[in-house]
Length: 110
Length: 114
Figure 1 (cartoon, each protein chain N blue to C red):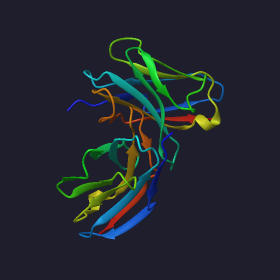
Figure 2 (cartoon, one colour):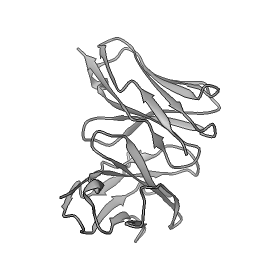
Figure 3 (cartoon, chains in turn red, blue):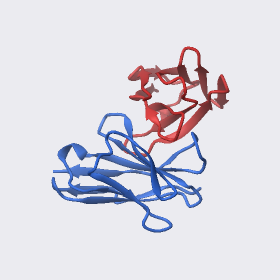
Figure 4 (cartoon, rainbow over the protein chains, first blue to last red):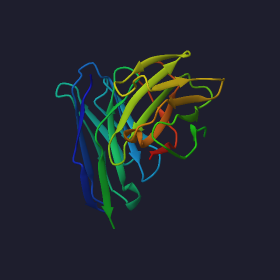
């Protein structure tokens, strides 16, 4: 089955700086890669996703890149704000079940 | 904007008891899921459901678990005889499309087994 590794587990950045979270996956058949943001005690919320026919996708301050050859994908957040502080999960699938990474606790320091 | 809802928000039960967790998926969605998240850990897939039957299930989803869509709106997860290690947050999710795509999560039910 699919295995997703996520790094780093914790990340602290100064407000206004960029944050990068990286994930690798094992199943070359995976073709859908969503990123979820989870605030403490709340539901995971989809913030951006990418499919395997695309190398990069951007939505305002958030971007995701995908390298199918190396089987890794990354989340980039620019101009970070305190409200970006949360746990971020990557996931991968080629079917319906999502396999999640272990999460990154992002803290944006004011 | 429509959302997935779940009840109860918190359920406390004694070991060995049966629990039923309830979910109302987004109304035009056809694919339903249950995930669990043990405190401080990652979200883990349990089961997917489509057209009144299980599509996929993980190793976690053993004979103690079952799912049902008893009517046109509810989607339930039953744990027959709870164990301490079943304590976790259980998330229901739904999606509109076949194959990989956006899944919308409910707020979760925190299950505590004592």
